[in-house]
Length: 382
Ligand code: GAF
Image (cartoon, rainbow, N blue to C red; front, side, top):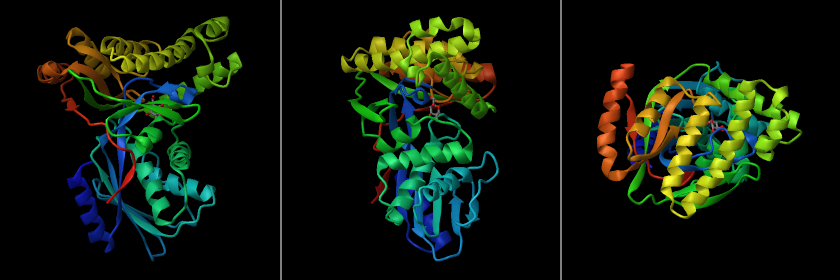
């Protein structure tokens, strides 16, 4: 966690609201493999990282609640009695959505002030939204002694995103952000919402993220479209979710679905298998196999599930050309954001220089490169 960020939020809160806040850190996440499998009740392999959101929160005697987005220098105020979504695309919906879900569960809260800021680049596919939702629900739970478990809190965060933001997300991001463990990735079964931690030590290899610095519009509607395709195929197959289907099952309904949708469902079934295989490869330290699975994941996201974009495909193709990148793929919902790369440590600097140059030559803009540490999930900053 970034102590400069925590100090900045504390100072900003005190200046604005004239009281001492509780401070909460809620991390973003990476995902090693298992993309678009979470809302199919499948497996994912994410980890919380040391970049995230810091929120300062305190009770208020005023007649309205206030939330200040420090980085944007924007403030909203609202009454708890007449809650409604803000304009589409506004950060405010992540906060208002959480408050609304607490009310739906008959949890009583009073007025409060929040100031928040973060160091996750927006649109990077590292889940700044889940981090914000989790920081708010965690803070309100502490402040008003709501007695919520972490499991309940992540479901509230997820519902906030469904109902106020309009993205029918799975549970991966909220889970990883809330339950992260330092130096571990979590193999999460999204049906049972239980995970198995894996200590991550890549030895001579490391993970780096390369941000395209692109976020294509329509990504939210495309996300919801993909989810409904999966649900309609599950219905045809008479299974609860695609997690319950095999490639053989899918073959039996091939003539009832379009070739494009057939490929999408096939991708999900195969990606789910890849996530499980990846965890087995991790168990025996077989990074070559892990890398191949990561490349195969991108191939599926690009050509079958069709949630990639030119910038992401270019970064992965470049990684493949350079033999020392064991695996690379787009990460998160898609249509922009980051690639995740498993790369030999001693080649990492050369690769970073190379990729920055060729990305700029090709697209006339900069990519950003990050190394992240795997970190503890949402917690109070003492
Ligand atoms: C986004 C969603 F929020 C997650 O639930 C998940 O579906 C992911 O895209 C794709 O794997 O981050």
